[in-house]
Length: 418
Image (cartoon, rainbow, N blue to C red):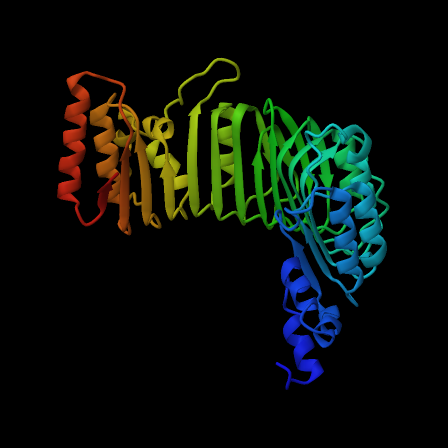
């Protein structure tokens, strides 16, 4: 290493990211210490200061290390820090910083009321940020952010926030193309208007009754969890859509145009039937469909109504993969559906189907439906049948399992049982 030119040494050391590695290199020699000022990315891991008792001491070490860099572009801090420490760091690196990732850790501390918002406020001076990632955030008052004109990606994981604070924060990031809000609590109603947004993942937990209005003409992928009312008027370019609700009900989904949609996933304990019909009707050209909804009904839990087998596949002619859970499969397995098979009826593009069976009820109709999928999906390459533990102790459950095993034996090149 001693024989290398200074430029080569600086180039090699510039790839260091761990703060401990950078500190170790500083101790090798004066030449190495001078070369580490070319480091552009520093990561302070959770255990970076495990031998230091006082957070103020770790703050000063971070400040000393980042101030020695000529142009620090990426700063990641998972170790504990104070708001005053963060403010001093931002004074040194705010103009050059492009990526900032912080583990805030102010959700359950005694000082959240005092210092929680101050940490967020300190970030506002880094106006050239392109990527901002925050963990464990308290945002119960609007952060004092002016504008992040270059910010393209905002990720917040684990947060307590209210509607107005979140809206204020998003208004300061008008040019976002990627937005991730994961495990966020306290949001009841949010309207997001980001003209350049392409990828969006929203995970609100609580009662599952959040109202969401999202407007973006460039939206390509959308993943929503915990919303009961969803309205997205601009979906011309939307290709991937996932809607789920662990608690509460999905009452309404309103999408203007899903002609480009390729993959759709709907999950949850209870969806209103109008919402299911609306999303399936709008997603006629979907290629990959995943459905795991247990019940329908506006209030009380209700089973799925009958779904016509022929009509369903005629309405989704481009379907290639279909993962269907018990309730939807039971709805397709009706006597009247298979009586109306048209001459020349086919399922043209279906290649893989995954079916979860939960009950032996209507076993004959279910077997007929399985046989129809094999018969009319001429391009079918794989069928997976997942049999959950059936609650019935009646011999019909054993008979049904026997029928499925015989069906698999007759179609062993296609059918797999899990």
